[in-house]
Amino acid sequence: MNTFKKNIFLLILVSLFINCESKTNLSDIQIEKKVDEIIDQMTVDEKVGQMTQIDQRFLDTITDLSTYSIGSLLSGGGSHPSVNEPQAWLDMYNKYQSETLKNRLGIPLVYGIDAVHGHNNVYGATIFPQNIGLGATNNPELIYEISKATSLEVAATGIDWTFSPCLSSPEDYRWGRTYEGFSSDPNIVENLGAAAVEGYQSVETETGKKVIACAKHFIGDGNTEFGTGMNGLVDRGNTILTSEELKEKLLPKYKAAIDANVQTVMASYNSWNGIKCHGSKELLTDILKIELGFEGFVISDWQGIDEIPGDYKSDIITSINAGIDMVMVSGQGQPYKKFMKLLKESIQEGSIPMSRIDDAVKRILKVKFSNGLFDSPLVTNESLDIIGSEKHRDIARQAVRESVVILKNDGLLPISKEISSIIVAGRGADNLGMQCGGWTINWQGGQGDITVGKTILDGINNSVSVDTNVIYSKDGSDLSSVSGDLAVVVIGEDPYTEFFGDKDSLDLLKEDIDTINQLKNKGYKVFVLLISGRPMNVADHIDEWDGFAAIWLPGSEGDGVSDILFGDYPSTGRLSYPWPIQAEKGANAKTSDLLFDVGFGL
Ligand code: BGC
Ligand code: BGC
Image (cartoon, rainbow, N blue to C red; front, top):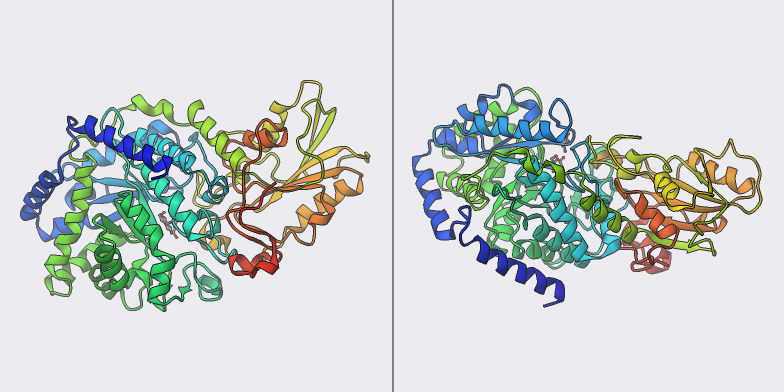
């Protein structure tokens, strides 16, 4: 056992000991017994309700929660309460949970959200670097702390479940979700993913609130062939691997998450050898539940079953029989009522055996019991201060500085804090939204001051001495010619999420190149900072730059970048993805085609 594992093991022992007296910790046998008692009393309608998950935005009337004994709500990207502030999130949670509890058997809701880099839908929450940056830290203890901090912020608003960690190991950088993976190397993902699961699920607040993690997207989400996905690109495409290859390469990541006791797994939109994962009994039942012994429940992805060939009813039958336990129905126009009606019909006709339904409901109820939801689901506002607290922002800042990968430095770093003047330029220099990327406040993220945090410019301003003249220029055009002065130029990608980020070219924007050239032509030395969700095409430009660092999508604490620029901390960030000369070749490129290999960083 390495030290990290040892520490975790000790923590688990201690918490087991403490929890002996906690009312939320029933033994497995007690839970089984209680679950069986409830299932014996449940009608088909109530079972169907438990298997249904709805985005709160698309709830027809709130009383549907109790009428249909709905099992779960989610807030998809951007599904906020009418005012986006922590108290309103908590009120929203309590409102829905109280209504749900009125169902005949008093079964609580499990409320899910994509807290994928902090509690990122909530205004004012700490926004941690996206996973690609965390991969560059390659620091499992830190990832444990980040995940724990995230869970504390999630739990403070009452929410029970985060759809994280993403265990993809992306290979084609044209994929818009590359940044959701820690690394293209499944071994790194395995190690960091398990630490994330442990961190997320380590939390139990004073009111007994715990947070459930979700390993996603099962399986092969990062390995699809270019051209087979949506719009002829990568997302939701087809992954081609033999059964042996899949098991050897991709399964250990899930095994490690299951060993870390991950309680839910999300099915993936992609296909495996032409068959949608959502409809594959081989994957969801034979491999995940039987071979890996996963005892939690499987949630489908957002309208993910709809992509199985055939009509909606056959999608339901195929996916539930394949092993999906809860369906993320979502979408507009009350599709959940249609879903519940068709699921019930399929059960009554015998297309889905009652044993499969009971198994699904049993898995869902077990998770609800283990997490104390039957005891104390409602929350008070006592813990709200933890959201965006200094303590959590400090962890995020540490993560940012450990994620910066310096790829070129012609004697510019560390910059002296006494420097007489410094230019800070580029679209990303003073742009919180851009440095946070997708999955921040809204599904696709946003530009500018979308939440609370420090931009790269703020960080530089706070680092230099009072005598330093910091000159901010968005595109360099308003600056006069100077010889030899330093310009830090922050360029990169605009925020995107999922297929919106699929691109067939990973060239830098012309606008960004123009800004750099303006500064070069005026005689400045340029240190380029790239905000991006993946390696990009820099090979044709890097010779003209005096320094270059990848800062990925650092999140709300931009001052972590200046910690490195000014040498307050040593630079420890290393590439967790190889950086090809032609970025479109992704992680599959041969070593000879690489500009920088995995592990590189100055
Ligand atoms: C994504 C998932 C996410 C879910 C809920 C889907 O589109 O693929 O990663 O958890 O939406 O927002
Ligand atoms: C939701 C996301 C979800 C996506 C799936 C959006 O409307 O807000 O959470 O992942 O749809 O396409």
